[in-house]
Amino acid sequence: MSSLARPPVRPSVRVTLAQIAASADHAANLVAARDAFVAAQRVRSDLLVLPEYASAFDPRGVGPEHAQPLTGSYVTGLREAAAATGVAVLAGTTVPGDGDDWRATNAIIAIDRNGELAGVYRKVHLYDAFESSESDRFRPGPADAPPLVLDLEGTRFGVMTCYDLRFPESARRLVDAGAEVLVVPAAWVDGDLKAMHWRALAVARAIENTAAVVAVGMAGKGLVGRSLVVGPDGAVGLAMDEQPAIRTVDLDPERLRSVRVHNPSLANRRYRVVPRD
Image (tube, rainbow, N blue to C red; front, side, top):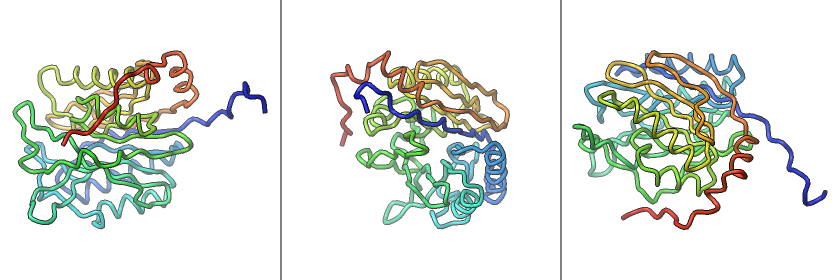
């Protein structure tokens, strides 16, 4: 083969965004997740994305009382649904603390299309801002933990969550680990300018990393919702409102490749990201 020949074209990856309104009822939230799996299977999606706190949410604050182990009924139910439908999933859950720290962990779990647990991201940046204090109830994940980056149909998906979106280093670290798509499950709290921040930050993370962004917000009281998908050039391809809904998009890896050739800002960078102690 000539060295100038183009590599084989990778197929598009189909992603379903489930902007659900979760409650404190674990069983009801699992039913909602299973319904989302059915919707994703119907359109032959490769990946389903559920919001942060999809396993249990309380607008007054999520805490250790909402936590379940990774062997609990919610994660087990997701694994069964993934295996039954052949759809991989990223979903927010709350994991109990261990040792002397009673606080829970805000986690995003990754389950492959065979129903196997493929990885866990423990939220690094806790939401101690805008009169909230997530660290009162949660402990942060280790900043130096290996990035959670998953290969799906030849496309690399990097995982972070909610408040992490405000920290460009989180996204850049995932891109340094090979991510081409940044997935951001969130329960983005509403307030002055907060919906604008959500959209603007998602677009910024896409442009500066020449990466697609799939940002899935939870719907419901006090939350922004407004899930969106941003292309690697910053163009918004899907924008939802605040109501519960399920939408599906196709991500084209060839578009990502061409944007990175046209805008080689990653190759031109002069600094790297190093986790702080």
